[in-house]
Image (cartoon, rainbow, N blue to C red; front, top):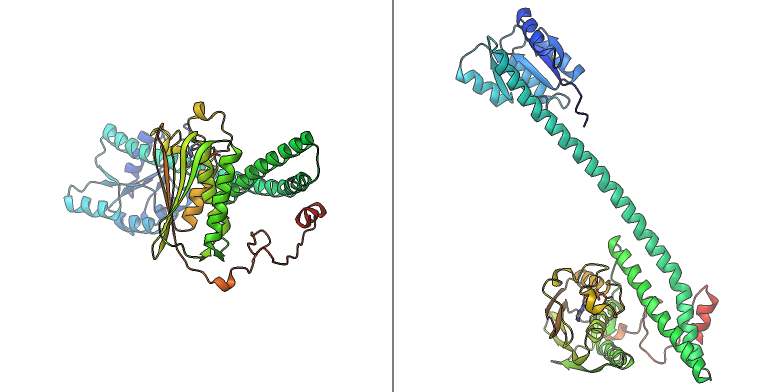
Length: 415
Ligand code: ADP
């Protein structure tokens, strides 16, 4: 706001002498407009939009109360503060004016210093409101800018991640095929390193793609009928593989409390992603002891508890562990790879599934992550209807039509 802007005042009085006195007193500090009756007052208010109006009450034609009512009804003039000029020493008249929306009274004959203070105080409020309005507008514009740039960032990340995924899939697939060849031992080692690194990079890219979808509000579930026990088998094998490949001296335990439903309806790919995120963290941050996945079901829910005897999370770090791109306790975790996206994505997925997730942890003793999601039983006859080309097909003898415009990917898929 420009501090040097001169405030303006509209003086309305049918007595020319009053107008003259007020103008002389106020002109050095303010821009003055005048009107000699109610009709002119309304016109002048609309034309000049003064910062404040000094309004006589008793006038021929329209009186001050009527003028005030007209001004208040208009969008243009409704917010201009009005101070009544009155010689009436009558409480009921003051009440009437204030009830109509006047902000103050100035009594005639005018006491210069008091009058100036009253006007000054009202204009201070006007200027403060204007500053707030200006700040609000600036803030709103800034929010629009931030939203636009955040949208542009998410779109960029989504496009880039998508574009990078295609060649990455080729590197993962081709190196996997090469590993099946009769390679010399050192060559096998090189290719295995390429393969492992490519998978790690692909995981990061997939996480970035997910987080950009989350930030753009575009992450959606893709629900199908799926074999729940097969999914748990697959997750268990993955967890055992991770323990082995990281050469950890820890035991992985699967604890199933009651008979699991064989077929569920939901997004199995995302459920697998959630559970593997938590399990791979548990394995990553545990050097000895065990990591356990416990599953139990009720009529309406499935509960997963992933517990570990690892390094745990301090109470100070606890509020931040679900923040995107954040890895807590960097001193201890420096050697652990990761992007700090896994928990943030998992929490969002749980919320999208209308589930709940919480964590308890004690530093040095371990952590317990609890996830509960609604249980929707599926139809077994519909399980093998793969409904999109990225979904894992569990039927081992299924005939598959592979469609891809990328020849390398086609070779990998059919390899
Ligand atoms: P990332 O594992 O890629 O670093 P996450 O979002 O999965 O990212 O986890 C965020 C941080 O939370 C981790 O870097 C780690 O500091 C902490 N954390 C998550 N799970 C565990 C766990 N089971 N034990 C100890 N710390 C954990």
